[in-house]
Length: 274
Image 1: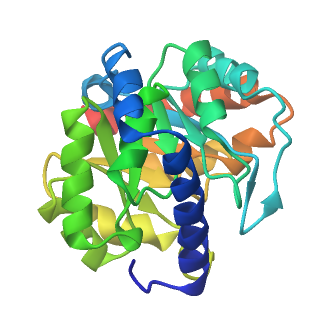
Image 2: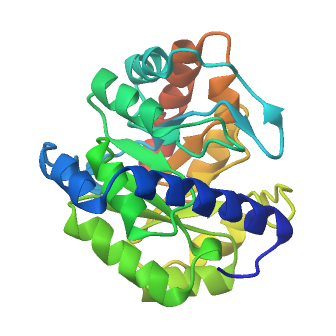
């Protein structure tokens, strides 16, 4: 594990402990059987490339280390269905339990409730977790460069592809972007939240997105609290925006997603993507 900051180190230490417990209870061979029984994963990357609109990835998120409790979300499937009804292109599900209040049960429930692609968002450090993601119906998995060694990242990207899923590779600075691209990432998330300090720097996307190689599909992460924030990311080149706290805490999540989707499909935004 990289020494990338006490917050990230603490989270990953807990992730590894919880992972060891799951591995002790369920052998990888059985997880592979469950994964093999799943229908093929949905191709979110192709959907983004074929769309003239900026996509909304709506997140099921109960809490976070930076904000604490966000929403109780007693029924993640119902929330995800509301997101889909509002026009979300994909649903992100937090499955880390200690700090984000999520679980693989949430992922499975959301998968049963929606037809759009589903992202497992967690701190993936082992191929076992990638198999778990497919076994529970995920179409995408989040891989965080700051949480992985270079060879680990390459191996996890290859494993994700081998299972028909798409890796969303998250970066925070120029070095991480270079590593992600060298590892073969095609879908890259630019996270404005620094995992070392939990502070948000809105300039991250502005600084890094222009450095991405041609053909990279760019996802803006963090810092969206209104449709105007989505528009700002769109004007700066985002293909999709991943939105968690704003939507999870919205009184009317379907309407909140609908407003974001409308902004992402606005003629002024669509003209940038032609």
